[in-house]
Amino acid sequence: MPWLDARLTKWLSLGVLVVQNSALILIMRYTRSSVDQDHLYLASTAVVMSELVKCSVSLAVLFHSLDVHTLSRFARLLYQEMILQWHQASRLAVPAIMYLIQNQLQYVAATHLDAATFQVTYQLKILTTALFSVLLLGRSLALKQWLALTLLTIGIGLVVLPSTSGNDNSAMVIDHQGLMAVLLACLLSGMAGVYFEKLVKASPKQSPDPKRALIPMHHRSDPTISVSPHQQFWLRNLQLSFFSVWLGLVVLVYFQDGPQIRALGFFVHYTHWTWLVILIQALGGILVAMVVKFADNILKGFATSLSIIISTIVTATLFHVPLSTTFLLGTSLVIYATYLYGRK
Image 1 (cartoon, rainbow, N blue to C red):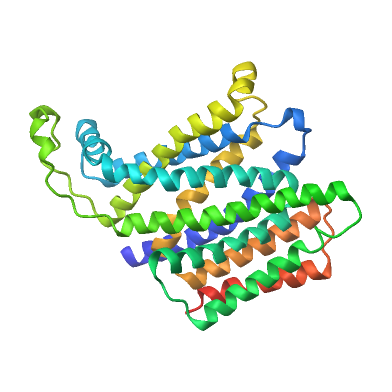
Image 2: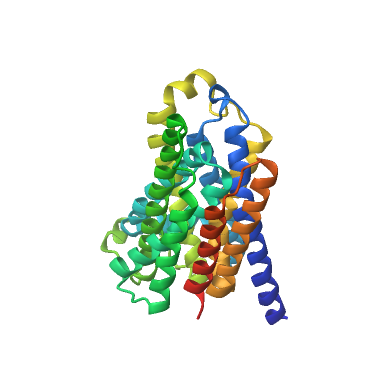
């Protein structure tokens, strides 16, 4: 029954989203704080591996959903989209580099902030996404949505207030470094997400390419393989991950950590917890498509709010982080603002 399958998929994707949002920050924080700085795994290689996992999953989903039957026809489709349509695919390099830097900043924030502060503060991406939607897509927001964004900003301010007040100057520097990483990650998250949405929705229809006449017949993609909007979305995710992998290898791995990787290896200080963070981060990118397709904004808001509550409780229990009154008040405002912004 398609209706039952769609309903089951909706609730399953939301449930996994709650677990993913809660687990990513907690486990990432654990892997970055449980060892000393000399034995930390390289965040640049972890980011690239996460993108490689997303690329592999997108390839598998496309091959399974497309009626191509053979690897040769599937390769022909990829040749058509990645080579013949290169001028369209190359535009995804812009959000790809922004997503790479954003994921790198998440590791920096997880190193210098406790999981609860990181999780709540990271909800500022709702504000940046809304602002870039107005600027780049020309959308208009309702009064209650602007109210929700205002409450969100106030709530985030209350959450970070205890972390930036105190007499220990060294602690203040560490906190400020983590907070700056979160703020930049939220900015890049909103910009990259809206820019990617604009590219997907503004994709022009395929037109005849005069250069195709110079392509040998056995290399041409005719007859063209039609794809549905859902398959086109996964194709765009594949292109995005493709650029992310190569840009990550060049920008992050080679230029940032090249000497250390040549000396110690690509997977230096990797543990099973590191691989778990990589898989969870890749799952988060895949869940975006599923939640948008099968769920609505109200349920997504509830899922986000629930993940904040779970991560806050677990952080206070496992990491012995004291939760002040201002922190709890700020968290409550963030949860309500998340619900209010997505309420129809």
